[in-house]
Image (cartoon, rainbow over all chains, first blue to last red; front, side, top):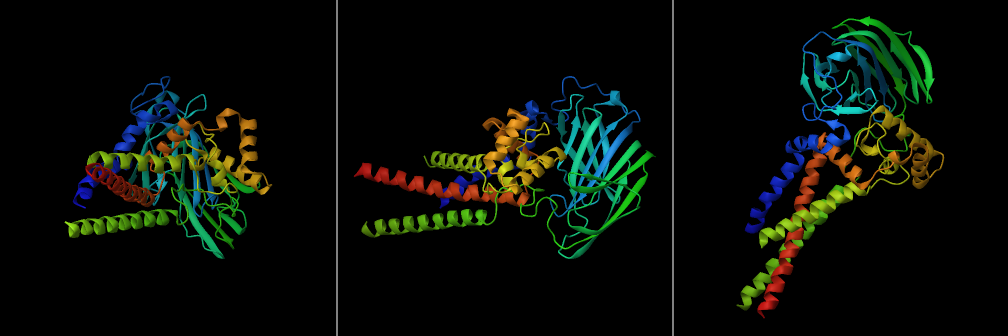
Length: 278
Length: 145
């Protein structure tokens, strides 16, 4: 067993390298060919050069709020375009709701429509979280899951989402999707333009000249008899990818431990037998 | 020799576990994750569609859900995407490896499951090492006789 102990050290080191911080550093290199880059590692060759700390503004931005779309939380998608194309690449700031510490993606779109997904940093702020990201182009695409309520069957969902502008926004469009099977769906403020898209009822709010620091709050309430997301309830939730499904991990682990125990038992018995014979 | 045996065990276990996860899926062919495992993310990202949650990826997943509801099989749906979107909708083995690696490096899996994956690799490496060691010792003792 002493040898096993010694042998475990390189394994732990290898696992640490594979799973921990060394991996992202390698990732930038690995993915430069796939447009998944660290801001420092691989800006696209045709990206414009930075132009210092000049004041910038967002020309158009669309915020999509999709409660219980593919999971029991709210899918939030922010996409838009800065007015100052010449100011990029540069670091920009976005405000996220408190509690959002992980993004699904933050990407910049090249003029050709390619996504250049970026590494990012989220810091806690006063009543909100701050997302710092270096964008190679003026277009951006950010999506994340926000969990302001716990979805339970036969319950009222009631949450507020505040959009706080970190920059002036010329045209802000907010689209709120009504989840499937939601009853008594209300939005405060009311008055969103209703439209149907891909079988979903949506409400659009068009806001002009939102100034830096201005907050736009939307309160959404509805009742739902189930706790399943809109995307067909027969299918598993897709908001998070899992390595293992069901009890497979426990079974694999238990089988491995049982195997080790059995082998150690056999080896010990054998060596005791050999010792007895000697 | 013991270190070499352990190294072999580690490589074999890691290769098998990673390969199994990258190339196979435990999700049923009749589910969205089961079908999206075989398609590329349409958002110009290197990801496998099952890991992609951007709006473009979600609309493809929605489409898969609708096709499944309409009674199409996994093969029918993959063929539909190929015919409609071309070769880009499918994944080469290299793209699949790159996509999964990206998913790991971006922290796309729950930390608990990553830790569990590490523990499982550790346990099965130890088991394989013990088996190889037992076989090795047996061969040595047979040679001595």
